[in-house]
Image 1 (spheres, rainbow, N blue to C red):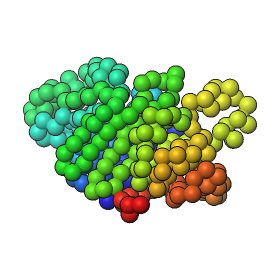
Image 2 (image 1 turned 90 degrees about the vertical axis):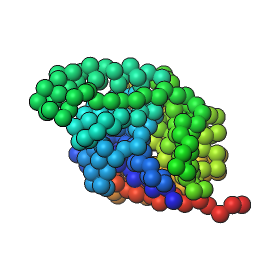
Image 3 (image 1 turned 180 degrees about the vertical axis):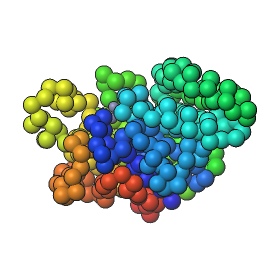
Image 4 (image 1 turned 120 degrees about the vertical axis):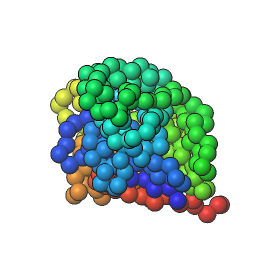
Length: 280
Ligand SMILES: [Zn+2]
Ligand SMILES: [Zn+2]
């Protein structure tokens, strides 16, 4: 079984009830954080996961809403561990430069803490691996592979596929439908996909908001990707506009126009247990 918890179902727009984009995936003994949006560690704490527990942080892309709290993950892991505990970050090319810049911005804080605590003698350790495709993890019975997605003009962007015990979960991040995402998601038991309601966003008389129409999937497009890939369960997140409780059925109905599998959506901390489907 792979456990998926939507830590943050929000978007760049600040929402008092939805943290920024982040998903927790627990598979075997691994604790994987996928993206690190606003409030990620607060939400992770709600399910008993601290920065020190993270096996690896997987970044789908470097859009600010997906990495706002990377600084918090780096710092909190550093100050809550007592032996050298590198944070492993797997992301697209450009990730190392962002991490370096964050560490530069944190230089005063790093200096204060090293100066004040006798047992803190070195700065945070972050090990970055930049990838666009291929297998990035094979161990502990878990396999993690990566494939390119299409969120242009934001590039490169990547999705992740986590496999454990016969079950598989794909995390698409922000993407329009594309062949490489189809390939990554092929036959997966679950697909976690960010979505926007294009039918609603189109109605807003604000060009800056309408600009997002061309590089995100609508609910129907994500559902169509899930159907093409033969996915069992579609897990929607990153709701634009924010998902209102009274609107859940409307979002489900849009997905159902393209996909006849299970559709999961909900508030922060919505949890889905993904199991392998019987073959055939
Ligand atoms: Zn994005
Ligand atoms: Zn986003």
